[in-house]
Length: 378
Image 1 (cartoon, helix red, strand yellow):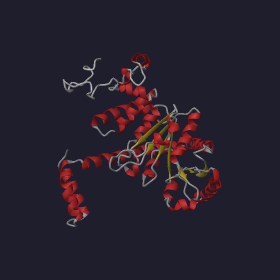
Image 2: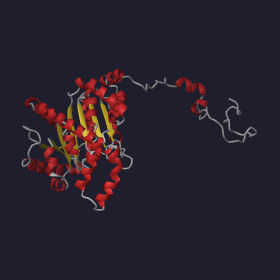
Image 3: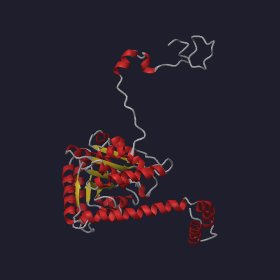
């Protein structure tokens, strides 16, 4: 390529060789110590990216554990676009017969308890046993952008490199307690892809624990040493949701304190109603950082699974969860339909203003809004 040919078309015709703007060919051009021929010979073959996958291709990709296609399918079910919702439902209908075989475990904990460290240790341990693990991690989300502040693939670097692990960090999407309303569908897709264990991490605030409890088989609570101090900031109800309590960071100088905390939690559990019928919730210690105690906790989780299968509790729990899912979806769609109604949107600002300034009570305002919603069908 000549000097003239390498210049952009907007370069002055009478520009001298000192004119600074040229189009460079990058590493293919032979500069920076690379020859043009050497780069061409060492270049890896380019695999074309298929953008418009058919329904059959998506379903087969999921069933064959194509992680790229699985990730695309999850993005599809998380979308609120009508055309995506339609395709997502078609995919879910096709994969339903292949779901329901995984052990679903919810994991929550007090801030700083090391949930992600524990999940990475547990996930890596399970992968070492030949099991396949999916982690559906719900991140704290920005109220401005609605996106994840910290992706769990960053926090779980070792686990993300495991070929038998799949990590899906998701924004909260503004739903209750930061739990994505599409987590249930994502869980089904992962089960269809052949994952044996589904770990769902909550952000551990508000009502997120209750929501996750309603979609998993087992619920684990991660705590720190000093049970009495922890309980000051922990609702009793959260402990009553747990099927296992794990005192994390039981290593080094903290190990003895962790053992004391374990005993304290065990005493407290005697006074609480068990979360699962026929199961006694126990407290264990572990070090997520060093992987110590993970094997014992996994054995307890397997015992729990065997117990609820044999007693019929698993079947009853999942039936109850499906019913809750139906009602949750109805409420969600009705809420969206109401607030997106043209008449409601039109009068809402004025109604809000009237209530705030004391011109009318809330009950009357809500009654008026429903009248607007019902008299103009959309």
